[in-house]
Length: 444
Image (tube, rainbow, N blue to C red; front, top):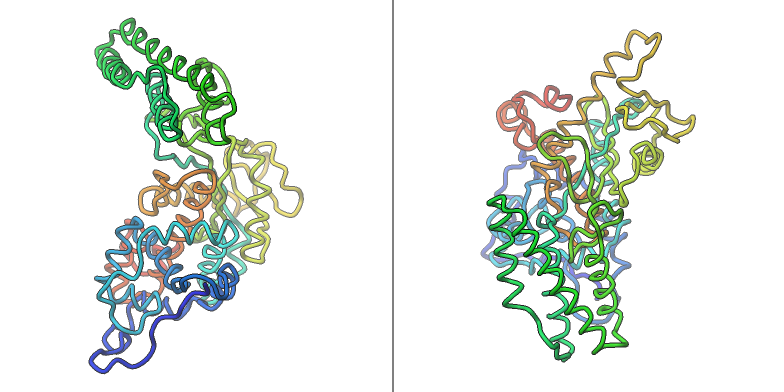
């Protein structure tokens, strides 16, 4: 049913939040700069007009997602802190202080799935629009942009053959129990014992013994697979998918391509970025585009299948044009973008490539390309991109887009801080270590 609106009638023994809050607070100012009606018009059509229970206010749902990634909260913690913080309640559209939880945290999951990829991009685009209206982002800022890719790791355990065999067997046994299929042997006790022994032998560098336990786990998985195939010759769609996944895990070899690294997240890829401290990362690539002058994120997109960096640049530039309405004139990238297919609309500079002659100002912008690296670091450490807990391919896009949204919100909150407070506290909102006025850390 169409979402209901928060109560606005006058309460006899309660004061309006705008009468007791500091109007110079950055959240108070930001709440008046966001066009909330845009979200109501965009998302209101996704609800049934007259069936079921009334939906939760759209401004509440959008505001909680903004606050979640701006202040690095989970679904559970952002709902709990909402009751304690009057500024958060005013930001989400309430006129009076709320003493009870406004919703269950699972409602946030349903809302994210309801609005889809286009709706999530709308949340991100509104942060750019606010910056354009308040002038932190101007047309000249989009003349030069920086582009780079990073890896968004998935919340999975480190994949080993032994663990994959064990987890896949446990999943098949559980699915068989749910369907009333009686297996000849489930290997629940033996499998658990073999996995524990394998880990201990591997830790002690007794590799032959560890390999023997891994072989036992593989055998247990194979017996359960064949038994289930015999007793369910015509499986349903879900069971057929799991049996096909089990077959891939059971037969894959060390140097195979398109390997499975997780039972519950089979789309995860192994990406090698050449890092000394972490040779392999398991997740998906994310492309980030920032303004060269002051590091506003103007484009972010999740990629699957581990594409070549140069092949992602054209889509990234098109997204920047779609979100901002302006096409970047120059893009600065590292050498991983050789062989790009952007065309002539945007001139691409590869930092590190040998050039015979450079203009006087170009070396300065070459140095500014490195400014995108700390932005990616803050996305991971402060905006929840370090470990993605959202499920599936759609969850990768959700987390990447909302992390960039939270980063831009942090810069907006710093922009709306009073000058006196900005000298001390602004770096907390922007996620920067530099202490100074907005003009100092916004361009850092």
